[in-house]
Image 1 (cartoon, rainbow, N blue to C red):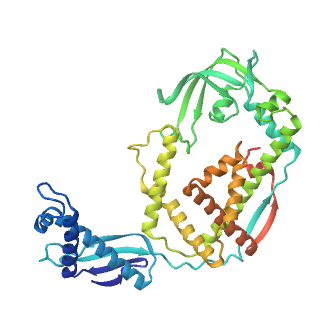
Image 2 (image 1 turned 135 degrees about the vertical axis):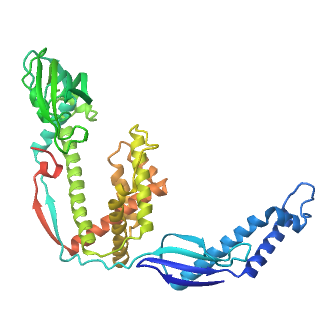
Image 3 (image 1 turned 45 degrees about the vertical axis):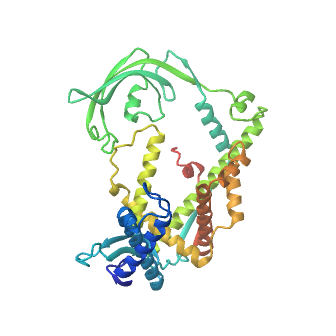
Length: 437
């Protein structure tokens, strides 16, 4: 066996492998002889099947297996000798025109990519902004009021419709005199101000009385999700059939019980709401800081993503998208998911993965078992039976690997924060949460 290596581009390599026919034939004969000792065939006693008969029945299959094993061994030996790190999987092909007189080709080429060299950018010059958020009593009460609204009951009123009211309407919208798809509905119940409908539509409903009808024009935004109506003007006919106003539950023991406080203690409820807000603030601050660090690493590091790894990542993202759609009851079979849609995100993920691997290797930032255990326990605290959740994580290597990846990222963030220029910035709670004022 012989192998020669050629560099075809920055990351791609081609390894030409020549297999000696005599060695292949010899190994084929050895395996056929071993097979003849144990094979069972009609008309022959075990171990008494003539070698010629075994060769006729199994010869082609055995030769393919021998060729495959020889290729893999020759490839592996050459890779180890050259000290190459393979990205993705090699593609084996018979060499065109080689060994044309042989019954089967014994010369192949293996095309593959190698991992790129990664020179991690200097993080010490990077400016990281870390939000500082204080949870006040006002945030706690605001959150409680949101939960009260989520549990509101509604009562009929005879006044004009106002924001936060739940109204029932019939509507019909036309563009160029024709009703467009999704442009008509009957007995549609909406809460004004929730944003289910366009603001300009809701503003026309505000002030209407039950039983009243109204006609108005509305221009859809240019970036409206319904492309067939985006940027176009529609004429709507709306009939308001019912106006109901919200009745919020009092903040009492019964309300506290609906939030999981068994004894109905209102102060316990407020404390738990505050703790939940503090956990969410911590999570969001960590996410914002991590995003800045990851982006800084990508911006400061020149690295080429192997095509094979990008293709694999695209396939993973497509599979994840299909799974997400199926979980929402959407049939994804036959739904087009062009690779180009995921290409940019896949490129970024692969590059970031390569950079993080190098940072972890250089600085010894691997996840430690006790760190993983602590993170699993922290995750479990948000559930009713933490011990069962911990057990659930440790029962699955895949689930545990997810936590290990999180721990590694946390280690990278900790390293970066100790290296970069970090500035704490006082941030409003609503700004951090992305709440509109």
